[in-house]
Length: 433
Image (cartoon, rainbow, N blue to C red; front, side):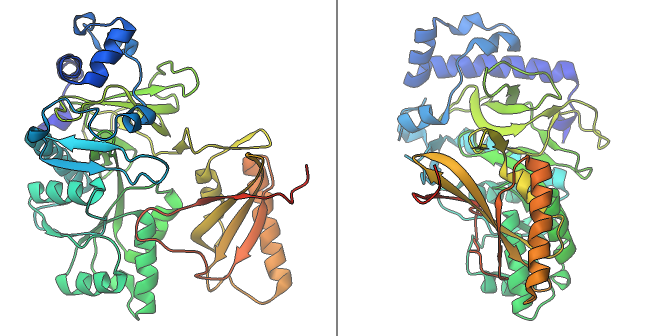
């Protein structure tokens, strides 16, 4: 699409105008932002170019929670046509409201992401994201319809029926979390089907990080091309960035979203290529505008030209979250590092669980529960002991610490139809001081 091929000057002009309009709209119509600007001594006329934008305080998840449910609204509620929200499992839900124009812009954005991935009007796309308050299902639904694809709105769960209909409907595109795609392949085999014979040609995955190992596993099992895309409820939902056929990072729709990378500690804006926390500002969002939202996701911006010809910068794959970083005995650990290590062992399935043993609120130790594949499972103790030792050695060299390893029988760890839960905490009084 033409918007993905703007020159640097055209993109800068759109961003400048979009930022100015977003600031004026938020200041004039959102009580939250009016108060924030007044407190910081800022006025909309203070911002002439994107660099000036950096003086605006960040918006955080706590701000959105404190504003629950309608404190971020910048239009009368009768103009809000739809409301989405986060799960609220770690606190109050985060609410996002959309006007008619917001919904229209959102559908256009997702359609661009889907086209980038290779979806065409001739595809039959089965959406296995949950519908409801979660943005994934509805976001992909309307974007795919806008592109002209045929949509099968299955939602999550009921895996065996999903697989049956996938065969009957001759689905060509699967939309789901990567962990659910792996689980579906497992269930397909239990039903006596070979996933490779389903005829899927493309997968659009999101909702959780997808390591290269997971991507390769999905592609091998389903014989499809796996692409990933990125979005979050706080900003809009899916449709912020996505992969093209080159799969060298996710193109950000920079005419709609203004991205920054900051040092998560100092808050200073970093240069292209430097790794830090992604901050996003949607341009032109009416219902619930957000300015400089700290996503918590760790990535970097890639400015080098993409062979596909699109001129938008790309964001690298998410390597962790600033609030998911685990500190054990002074060592910083991201779950994605552990996943990459485990993926190197053919005896190990993609399913694992990190158990953080805490004492008086501090993490004292970590146990990595590793599920074995049927081929990797054996009753020979020496073989299991040797495998455990190899995994521990590799983790020690990668993380600079040696967590406990617990090998689990095949299919013993809990499966999910949505985002996989990889970390649990255990308050353990028996650990040594």
